[in-house]
Image (cartoon, rainbow, N blue to C red; front, side):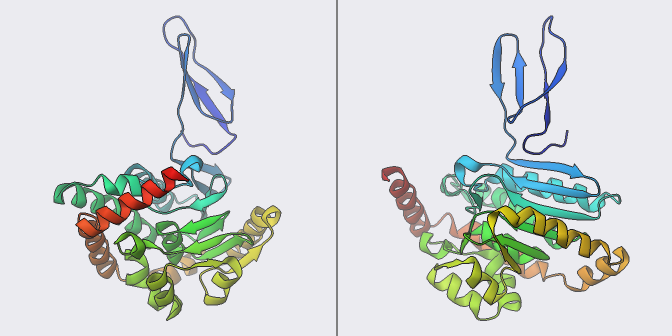
Length: 285
């Protein structure tokens, strides 16, 4: 079942209860007299010939854990193979686009088997971004940090609200940003070097200046601007779009090696110590 925020969700009851449908802000399964709230971490909704994919862990600032990366890859591949879909829009639910990788989940990686499993999941998601034949627009609705910022390097048109902030702070945690260091320089030039070496946070206007963002708008105009850009893209022949995207593809082998390096570094004592300190600081705030 495909859905988005504020869409119809199935109410499923067992025993003598009938199956029926109702509209709720949160998807709910009702079994007997007990109600369980189930919230998918990535939402997908079809709007005419456009697929909207929403990062949906607002309570975690849409941090991406293994399940999130896996679902993102799944939805992107489905869109890529569906000939009736002409474009994809990626956005976030709540006040953030994405805070990047879930540090709690990364801290739980214990050995090389865990690291390899994480590597396979993350690389599969990145590969699904690189292999997209359809235009990918990004509606940045709030902060984009770490992996949430790096995703933008694979988007075709990026529209941001004016109060969004951007940062690639993995180095502060004893880690590396695999997407930024493998393809960032070819896209942003020397600007990416400062971002990854300092972990600085920059504004939407600064992000536009260095080429990380294309358009900056007021929050209330974000989705109107997305629709306007979609209309412009639809005027371009799809065969032309797919051919141009093919030649614009990034070096997957370089990305793969960088992701593996991240997975292995996450097991190191320095990274574990820094991630643990980061989590403890958040708990004491």
